[in-house]
Amino acid sequence: MSCILALADSTLLLKGSHQRPIQNRNIAAQFTQGKLLVSKKKVSVIKAVAIPAAPSPAESTDYRKQLCERYGFKQIGEPLPENVTLKDVINSLPKKVFEIDGMKAWKSVLISVTSYALGLLMISKAPWYLLPLAWAWTGTAATGLFVVGHDCAHKAFLKNKLVEDIVGTLVLLPLIYPYESWRFMHDKHHAKTNMLYEDTAWHPVWKEDLDSSPFLRKALIYGYGPLRPWMSIAHWFMWHFDLKKFRPNEVKRVNISLACVFAFIAVGWPLIIYKMGIMGWVKFWLMPWLGYHFWMSTFTVVHHTAPHIPFKYSDEWNAAQAQLGGTVHCDYPKWVEILCHDINVHIPHHISPKIPSYNLRAAHKSLQENWGKYLNEASWNWRLMKTIMTMCHVYHKERNYVPFDEIDPQESSPITFLRKVMPDYA
Image 1 (cartoon, helix red, strand yellow):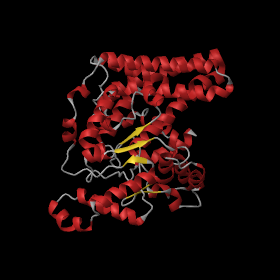
Image 2: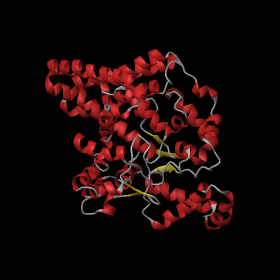
Image 3: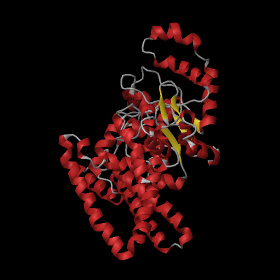
Image 4: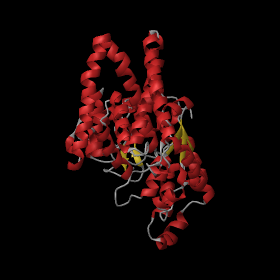
């Protein structure tokens, strides 16, 4: 599976990004016109050309409601006007959401460490038929460890930056993530969110890659289809261990993180195998790790992927539109949100990564009050995931995405299968 994921992900790293497919051509055309109102840089052109062709506000509202129903969203935001800057949005946030609170930070660590330890205890005690539940809990708790490291990497966890880096390094070790490697790459994702080529989180498929070889085509179809909830494994493997991907001034810190990860593998894995055998390693480490990657992949894709959310070339890209309008807030079951420290409250995190996870809800409330009509919001549901896994595949300039089975129906049986078997509940 990892091999297929790595092959599929390789095109993301070397090439580019995506935009969305709206399968109804008429609706797509209406949406393009609607965006024209706010995307043309010259106001005179907008007044002279765009406004007469644009739908009325009522029609626009109805149109967005149609998209919500179709894609599994609660709200699809209006296009953000081009004269709004990211600084405008940041300045609208209350200052208190940027404040670092040591007690809240250590509380996050306590929640993650104890929930992860509880998960390991559950695995050790559970009968075989309850192991999937224990693995699901432990993988989710491991995602909480990642979120702690994530805050540390953004320098939004503790005031003492040395302790912050130590904590970040330690909590990522069970996940085999080199802290500094991940930090440097993730910073690029925030600087270039939803920008074609430059965004390092993920990219949609380019048509030329799909046509380059039958084997790569199959790998991409499986990777962006049924294996999509684990695509972060390929991203982890390909982005974080290659020193050539880092600037010379970053390499020293990356090497320290790599040494820590390899030390953990060299000591931790043999110890687990010595005490419990290879099946103990599978049971106590591999399965929770796969559970973590399910959430890592799901959060990443849901946060930035929908048929109506475009990826853009750098010369067309707008920071405020990408961070506010190109990021999705998604509600999950409460226990998931608690264990994962509200990482799903993601729009304020993209407005400013300096907001600690324990302040994200207050920041989101402020965004709803000041910018609410521009926000994309959803609850995690089958229709949302089905939309992403069966529609958001190949980059298209006007439609954002074209699904695999529209381009090559014969080779896209995994996508056809998902369309048939995945529930359509929203």
